[in-house]
Length: 564
Ligand code: ATP
Ligand code: MG
Image 1 (tube, rainbow, N blue to C red):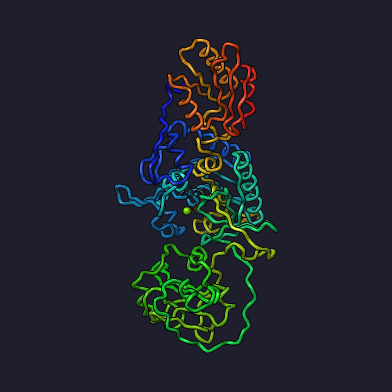
Image 2: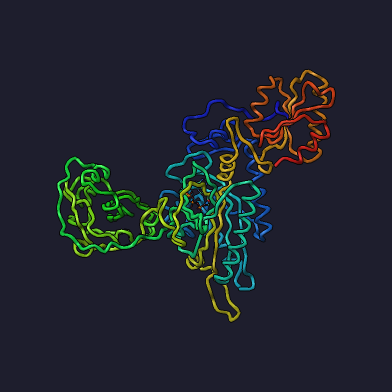
């Protein structure tokens, strides 16, 4: 492709909402174009990368024996109603009706239509296992679309679904997908970790996420260097300390005026945060519950949501808190609530004695509160976030934390969808069973952004060859010089003949401008044809490591085979 014909424009300025390197670079390099919040078009250069990533995924899915098909994005409501997800997805689902008033959605994920397709096609154990996939647009009205194509409202996903006769079969299908995912992310050059993930309200017997470690990652990953335990913070647990066996002291009400934060309270009481239990009121699908965790802990909303199979969850409103506690916000506690609400207590609190809580009265706290004597929780469950230094649940060594971008998610679903949609098979004896399912997703758009996050510098993108929109860019320094242009054209054609997608920057621009664009676009091999063209000498620069050298024409052509 001749750069003079290329439909692209690089940009110096990027909009203020582009906060992270990949988003900025995708806009600056003209790979994508914003249509609306969380909705992007891929321009030719971006679309090439998209197709390259898609190709790797497709090759590995096919190698793993999965079969590709394509479902519509516009789907009738019925199957989602039958599975319960019409409600469950809540405001994240894009919904609409046709001219006759029939409800439809834009598919946020496709378990339902795949389950129906298999139900209506296969009836016998002899047909199973089978794994199907598609690479298709998904629609989710995300609460906070951001980071460009990392978290958008329309995005591309590869989603696969496996159907087996039993759990043992599912384990095999799952392992095949796991291996395929490793090959995909290895080939794409990503530095990733596989972590245990929340199976959530989806039920199922296990799930793992493929996380690219990155400071901008929206997920927190908890890991143990000693034994290899790794889990998403949403799911991670820790070994808890020994229970306190001190004698119970009499409860005391303490006047704590002008104390607003936990830090101020700790200073005022001359104690530490772990002697305190915070009580936070949540509104979970319209029901208010009180949640108690140790003062130095954060509540894990995924774990909390799972208890209630929550669709929508938020902090309770000020009005609700004031009515239920009879105090201003900041003084909630389990003793003296004015309305009976469910109290969920973290398992760690169960081991505490003589702790401090809000007194349900403005400017007052209780000291020496004890479970059983002063209040009784309704539910005791792990609802806390693990933090760095907590002990590994498997081996007891200290845990570390890192941030990650979730690029893939594999999931043992079990029979949730086959039960609700009647996807059954007949065994040897002619008895009916629900098929046992797995589902497997890769965010194609998010993977592209993750590659850029991992491979960039101040000058632009540094594409690994496999994803690069073009592998080579030939830059004649002077387009008016016939010798220079002769060598440049010869090289350009030689690269194309050798099967490398190549650009020739034939624009009548200063070399500096061309170099800047080539660096920004991240083309792996830059070949500059200049002063020494007459002697058959050109200059090579590998974008990945910046290595530069002079080369003969033959060496230059050979060099394209060396890009990584
Ligand atoms: P997240 O927790 O990031 O919202 P998810 O758990 O909702 O992800 P899945 O439903 O498992 O994601 O979807 C499979 C894959 O699709 C994810 O691993 C991710 O790579 C991608 N993905 C999910 N939501 C988005 C989005 N809004 N924009 C881009 N990619 C997405
Ligand atoms: Mg999501």
